[in-house]
Length: 227
Ligand SMILES: Nc1ncnc2c1ncn2[C@@H]1O[C@H](COP(=O)(O)OP(=O)(O)OP(=O)(O)O)[C@@H](O)[C@H]1O
Ligand SMILES: [Mg+2]
Image (cartoon, rainbow, N blue to C red):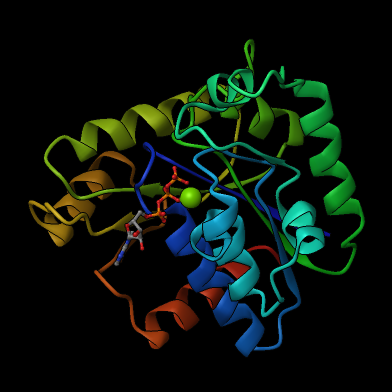
C-alpha cells in the first residue's frame, strides 16, 4: 500500500491538474493507482464531469455515476466555500474522525495500489470546524506532493506551506510548481524555491504539460514510493 497526499499553497493552484496527469501516466505505464478527494465544495451535480471527483474518475478511466462519484468523494457540497462553510449551508457538520476513517478505509481497500488523496484548498485550509487539511495529512502520516504556483508571491506561499508541513514532521515527496496564468517566471520561481529548499525535489509544470513530462514525474514518484 502506498499513499501520496496532494496538497498545495492554495486553492485553484493545480492540485487536481497534477493529480490527473500523474494518474494517467501511472495507468499508461501499468502502475495500479486510485484517487480519493474526501471533501469537495463548489460541486454542481449537473456538471459532475468538471468537478474534482469527475476529473479524477476520468483520469482513472472510470465511468461517472452516483456510485463512483460517492466512492471518490463521499462528502460533496454545492457552495463554493471552505468545506465547513459549504457543509454548514446544507445543515451538515463535518466530522474530522469520520473523514480520517474514510481515507483509511479507501487506502486499505486498495492494498496493491498507489493512492493519491487530494486535499481541499491550501495546506492549512479548514477541513472541518476544528481541523485543517494539515491535520489530516499528519494523522494519515502520508508523504505529500506539494503544488505551488508561479505568480508574484508564490514563493512565500510555497515556503510557508512547506514550513508548516516540516513542523508537523510530514515528508515532502515532491514540490510541483504549476505555471500560473499570471506567471512571473516558472523557471525563476522554481530556482528560488530550490535555493531555499535544497533538499526537496522541485519540478516545474509548464502550462499544458506534455505526456513525457507526466511520464517522467510519475516514474520518479513511483520509484520513490517503491512501486
Ligand atoms: N500546468 C497547468 N497547465 C494548464 N492548466 C493548469 C495547470 N495547472 C492548473 N491548471 C488549470 O488551472 C485551474 C485550477 O487548477 P486545479 O483545478 O487543478 O486546482 P486545485 O488546486 O485542484 O483547486 P481546488 O483547490 O479547487 O481543488 C484548472 O482549470 C486547471 O486545469
Ligand atoms: Mg482540485
